[in-house]
Image (cartoon, rainbow, N blue to C red; front, side, top):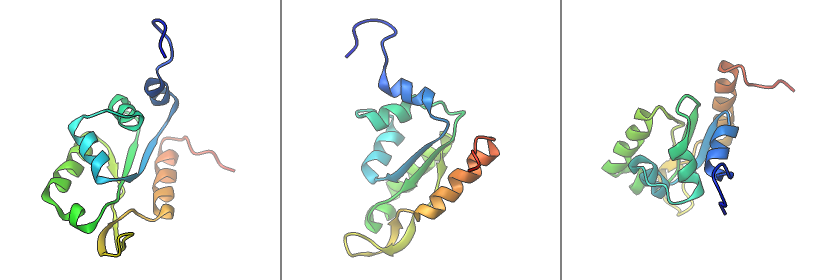
Length: 127
């Protein structure tokens, strides 16, 4: 709750704090919201306020029928036009039992991409 100017605003604080953002999974609903600029929850508010000089990676995940709908390609392209990086979905048996494209990329694939980007930005901490 805000009481006055300069009180903390969570989505802005998170935007400032993070060096990189990963949205995994990015479902069809949130994809549509982000592509359209809708920010009606914390996640979409952080994305809308995101510093586009910082990397934002998104990992689509949805049913094959939803993935293959023509609007999905338009929305993914919109996010790419914002400068965001897609980690493409993969084909396999989905939670609903269908087989096909739409499953989120493997966690290891996502981690490798994150490490690659952090390394390029000299932000990767070696353990």
